[in-house]
Image (cartoon, rainbow, N blue to C red; front, side, top):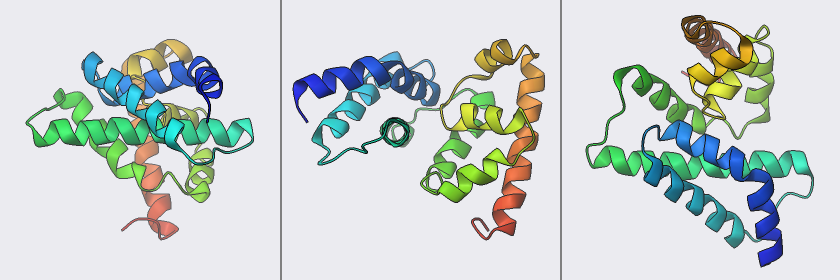
Length: 166
């Protein structure tokens, strides 16, 4: 990958990468910025990138999640903790990471009734905060949290049924 291609990816996907990293590392701006830099460093070192834009975007988002989660785990080993209300979401996002490679999982999430599937993806894949989702969907933040919690329960049942999850 040359410098021009990397500059294009930074311009096109920098915002999405920033959102993901800051969602996984809330209130840790410097750590989130390091995860962003790690993301684009990994992408730059990649031997090949997906050709079509859809797969490229997914690859970049997965790389950002991976870098931010690596940073989160590193911080956790050194005593970093999230506020109680975000701790469960972060732990679930880390657990979900191993499943996100599967196209079948994304298809299962999309079977959740609207807007629950979209809320779930935005919360756990793109790590958007509930406050932002509440604004976007014109719902109270507590309603968003409840819908996501219920969607998570439905998804866990579906995952067990499809033998993805014990």
